Image 1 (tube, rainbow over the protein chains, first blue to last red):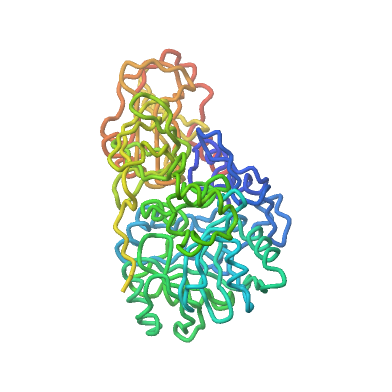
Image 2: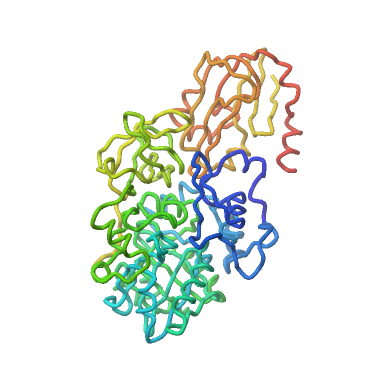
Length: 427
Length: 122
């Protein structure tokens, strides 16, 4: 693949997106470390050591890097390609992260997220078998509805977060790229004899995101017009059979579109030909999700963090709270009743300096009360934004805290997330 | 006036014993849109290799190191107020700080333009 830039530059100009060659190597070695300041070394995949099993032995990222079906298209569009979770992916196109971010909020952008894992879990007992791994209620969910959930370990820690949609005969799953092999091995083993896991590694995944995404897709696939947030439909988009889910990772209305790898380029070109749509890379995807207050696995949520601590209580559905029967239920039910020692919050630095992942959070007396888990510049906010964990006493919106950036305390406030208004189509 | 370059992608323009320091086009291209710049205050004494300034883009952050030793004469307040101003003119109005060199011989180890070009192409 193309060089991602001068190596000396990349090693010294400290990157913060989980996108660099250095960081990818750490993924490979299974000792993912946050880039700076933090002593924590969370495992990105949540299944003990993260060994990457993608069909090839990946000891050298430059030689054994995988590509998505859109690889040539990205290069034609002038993308800057970087290795991420074993794949060469566009971090940005010539427009740059800032413009791509703002384009997504104002109109629509197309993201290639084909590195993510897609699978079907089928069989008469698929729902019950899946529920044994997650705290979500999938029995109540009707066909064609999507629900966000988390795979849990026995301590209630998060192994991965994922989207699961009820489809005829089972579930359609979309999981994080860095975790997909472990996730699928875990699901397969745990549902053995009760359900069949079919990994859809012959499909690409495109995300069309932004307030104009609905108009664009309705033009090419009228059947998508009446879809609301977190619903799923099998549709033909200009004659190409697709799975469309009205969801995303930007805080905007939009779709994630699963398509046969062989037709992915045709679909991407079709969508990019629409006047409202521009390509956007992983850089914009990260700043968009941060402003939307959405967690990045391996950073904001890990095996050591429960969904209650992560402020994802809503993912533990009512019937499951009453009945339990998911991994770590005792821990999670106890935290629901008695509270946690830390909680995920939004943090708005008052100055202009971004507070990056690993930044220490102190109270006004200088006592450590937590750590930033994601932080950067929010192009739509027009300033720095962050999220992290603090002790519950300091989690109320409006609480003043200090962020220790380069040894100096910077004033910040705990705020309610998202940082930007969501535009989901709910009706 | 001569311009020298460091392996860390800084340029140093020398006029008498005053050196003006900035980051190169190549560095800027790698960083992308700048969102935060912190420059040193005048009067600060820097030793070659000290962290002198901070530059952050949406996706990355870095310290700018002092390429030579001396006392800071001026930090560029204009780019601290408006980091995007660096993008238009990194080799001109986008300068970071001016330093009164205490040991001009430190310049000897730095690259000229051809050497720097070879460095980034290499």
